[in-house]
Length: 325
Ligand code: BDP
Image (cartoon, rainbow, N blue to C red; front, side, top):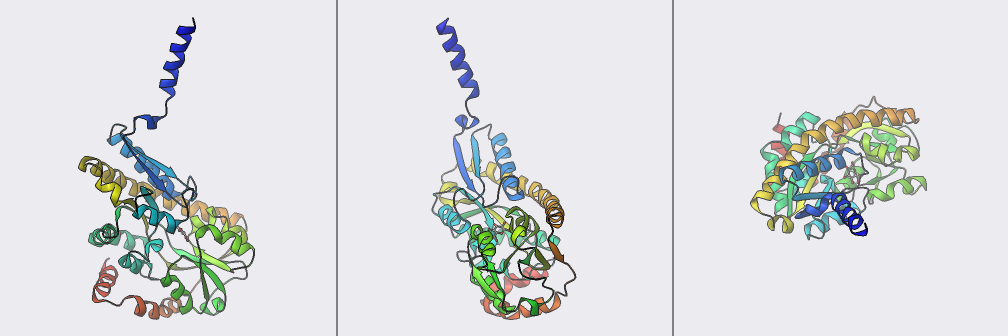
């Protein structure tokens, strides 16, 4: 009786063993956003496909909500192979991949279609080479929509309204210079510190897309959202090169295919989330300023372009982006 019970117990333990037991390759992937956010769900889709295509051998474990650290730290750890994968905004790579920094130029992309055409074509391949030179294998480009200003103080309808105000920006000089060009003050800080900094009045506001404004809860402390759409920064999924080089060509191919298949899935989820987040924050009482004359904002960015589009190869890249349909 005891033996039968033990055998039955062992069998059920074997059945209930976690799927990861079969994993030969396990990649830990970091994201600052919570479960359900389109970037997190994109990488989860990649994980599912990698598992299917490898008959269960390749597993990707997604760690959402900055569990593995703030974005810049997780990027560094991915470069050194401490973390295997990271999903982060291009803007967070600016200090280590100068070519990527050009994609953080305000008003560079005219529309989501324009951005897709750039990222899905030869420029996207060139950028992937630039990342690889810094020990990061770029496997997918995701959508991050358009970023706009929000604040706790007042509705902003023009550059004049921004003057003297203090906004959090991502930790990179190009964003600090963007704010100076608008006559406002920039406070670079990690994403995770923004909510309390607005709440305590350390800063007046920040800037981001609809889904981040919503999921971070920033709308609760900064109700004025001005749709000036100054930045469209793509999102990147990258694998550590150290880790990548240790994989078989077959497994690399599987990961590439899984990542590529996750792109349209993420983009669809993105479009849906943008709408859902807009509805949610409006219902919660956000005041959205939509009728903005963007021309003065665009014109004010000339010094930023002058400062960053310096070398001939940078001028060439920016020109190719602008000339893409
Ligand atoms: C979000 C990006 C995320 C950035 C964040 C930020 O998806 O990768 O960390 O903005 O502003 O839109 O830091």
